[in-house]
Image (cartoon, rainbow, N blue to C red; front, side, top):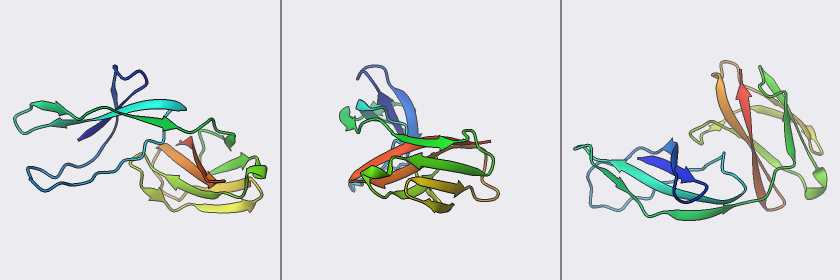
Length: 147
């Protein structure tokens, strides 16, 4: 199944996929985290392609994404490490790195008071990843590119 997002509720594009469960009468819950959502209202729907190639869409839902980031990650693109800085007055943060499928990547994170160094794991493939910072009851994400 494809997850599609729109900023206007009409023109959709694919932002991810989840593996379907095949033909079943048993209800199943899927989950997906869109780390590239824009601030404000984002619209989402599922697109399912059946074995006979017919396409079905779910109902459209609207999600209000939190405010703007005050988090800075550099260099971006990065080779082996990223410096992450943010305003510490909003509180300490829990920092995690995720891949495009929402899987957590084990990265070495060290630092203090809003100034951290994120060492990317050896052998990490080139691509886009997301640093997720939870602080003060809010979650903010910053895309980073591994070159």
